[in-house]
Amino acid sequence: MNTNDRPTAISRRDFLKTSAGAAGALATAPLLGKSVSLLPSDKNHKPNFLFLNLDQLSCEAIHHHGCAAVKTPNLDCIGQRSVSFTQSYSANPVCCPARSAWFTGRYTPETGVMNNGLPLVKGMPDLGQWLRRGGYQAFYTGKWHIPARQVSNSFTVLGPDPRNTASLGDIVTTRSVEGFLRNYRQNDPFFLSVGLLNPHDICSFLLQNSMYRGAMPYPELVEELPPLPPNFRCDMKEPREIVQRKEKYFGDHGDESGMGLWKDDYWRYYAWAYYHYITMVDGQVGLILDTLEQSPFAENTVLILSADHGEGHGRHQMILKSFLYDEAARVPFMISWPGHLPENVIDNTRLVSGVDLFPTVCDYAGIETPPNMRGYSLRPVAEGNASTWRDFVISHTGLNGRMIRTNQYKLITYKDDPVAQLFNMKNDPWETKNLAEETALASVVEEHRKTLDDYEATFEVAPLPKKAATSAANDE
Image (cartoon, rainbow, N blue to C red):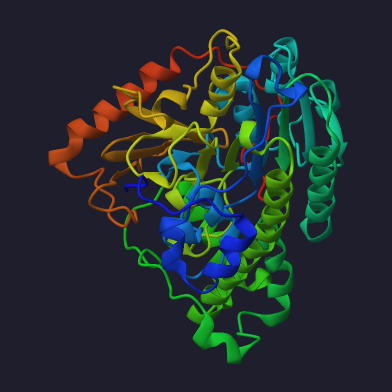
C-alpha cells in the first residue's frame, strides 16, 4: 500500500472523531503524534521502547486485519502507523511458555517453560536484565507470569500482576503507564513492558455457560452475532490430543460443562463475547496511546504490540488456547517508530515468531544479543532493507505437540501419535483439509519433519522436573 500521498498529520483524538463509523478511513490515516525535542532520557539518541502485550488476542481478531465483527479503533490506529506482520506465531500458544520465549529469545524446549507449571531455566538472561546491562532502565507493569523468575529481579515494577482480574487489573496497569510517561525524567533511555490481560476474560465465559446450558440467553442479540467461521465444521483427521479435548467438551462429560449442549447461536454468542473483551482492552490501549502522544517521548519511542497467544473462538469448534491451529498460534506483531519506519504496512508473507522480540529490541538499542538466540531482529524487514528472510518458524504446545510453518505449508505433529496434519496455507488458510496422508505429498511431510528435527537437534534442551505436567493449563 502506498503511504506517500497522505494528508498532514493530525492528533489521534481528532482522527478518531473524524473517522468514527468510517472504517475505510482507517486505511489512509496519517502518521500520528507531534514534533518534540529530545530529552536527556534520549541519551545518545537511543530510542525508548513501549511493549504492549495483550493476552489471548488472535491475529485475525482486529478490525485493521480485516475482522468486521470487532471494534478496535485504537489497535487500528497502531496498525495505521506500524509495520504489521500477520504471519506472526506464538512460540508456544499458552501464557507462561509464550512469555518465556518473548523475554529470552529462545524456544520453550530451551527455556524449560513447556507449560504453565514449569520453571524458567536458572541463569538464562531475560530482556530486562540484558537491557539494564546495556544502559537502559527497564520497567514492567501488569501481567508477568513466568514461573521461577521474579519480575522484580529483572525490571522495576510499576504495577501489580493483575492475574485473572482484567476488568479491574487492566485499569490499574493503564494508570501506572500514564503516571510513568508523565513523570519519567531520568537520563537513561527506558524499556517499558505493559502486560494487559484482556481479552483473557473470555475464559470466565465458561463459568456462566453452566447456568444457560447452551441456550442463547439473549435472543434479541442473534441478529448482531458474527457468523460461524468457515472452518467451524471440518471433516478431517485430527491428532489424538485434539480429539480427546473435543470429547471432553462434547462427549459424555460435555453435559457437565454445558458445552455438549451448545447450539450454533451459542457458539456465535461466544465469539461475540470474545470480540467485546477485545473492544474492552482496546479502550485501555487508547488511554495509553493518548498519554504517549502527549508525552515528550512520542517521537523517540519504538512501540511494539503483540499477544502471547490467540483464542479458539469457535474455529475448528475449539475454544481457549494451547493448540496449534492458527486461531490459537497466530498472533499480531506490530512495530512503529514515527519518522523511522514506514506506516500502514501490512506484511502478509514474512514469518515472524515471539522469539524475535528480544533481538529486535537489542538491534534498535544498539546492544549485542546473548549467545544462542533463536530469534531474528525485525528491524531490517520493517525498514525494508532485508534481502532474505527465514524459511520457517516453529511452535510447541505442552510436552508433546510441535509445529513447523513454512511459506506454503504447516505441519503439526504430536509425540507417539500417528496422525500428523499438513495444511497448504496458501490454498487453505482456514486449515480445513488435512493433506498429510496424500501420497503425492508424502515427501513434503518428510521434508518438513526432517527440517524440524534437524533444527531442534541444535537446542540446548532444558531438563524437565520429574513430575512435569503433561499438558498446558487452560485457566491462565
